[in-house]
Length: 184
Ligand SMILES: C[S@@+](CC[C@H](N)C(=O)[O-])C[C@H]1O[C@@H](n2cnc3c(N)ncnc32)[C@H](O)[C@@H]1O
Image 1: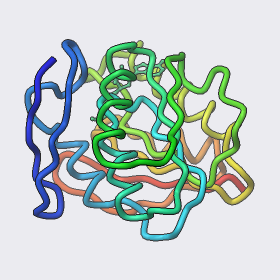
Image 2: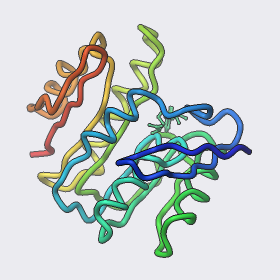
Image 3: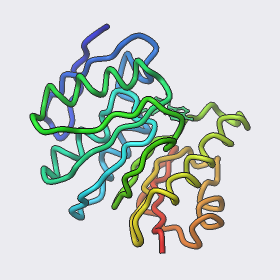
Image 4: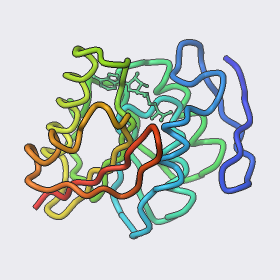
């Protein structure tokens, strides 16, 4: 296990990472861009899908203290890290699922946030990400939102438009896009 400190909104966060957890050494630049583009609305039920150390869900909870946050990841160490990190900052209960995508999660959500797995143009990873977008639709409430960060070249706006019938470009930089689809 290692500790690192990351600065978010100029506020230092201590984050626990068990070995092999994504972005163990430093904050991923895609994650940072999504952190800068978290939704402002007050969402009650939130799912941090593919949560890694839980940094997205924890940050959202920090901004929206009434939110009830669920974390899911297929990596056991990621879920352990997210659980411990959450408990460093909050006293109320969150929900942790060591599972494949949304499997076994019965709750419906107002918001799903996701920095999906990626590896350049790896088609297996792309398939996993696309399945996560499809699964998100099944666990979103009507008018619930899926917000993702992705490498520009993956063209996920086309995929999301196909699944949800709508997609909005929230922000972009030279490397990433932030996309949002609504479950209408
Ligand atoms: C790009 S990382 C993002 C981690 C974290 N949300 C962040 O932004 O730092 C993607 C995460 O998805 C998880 N993952 C990959 N495939 C998955 C699947 N099928 N179901 C759930 N989680 C998965 C990985 O273990 C990894 O933690």
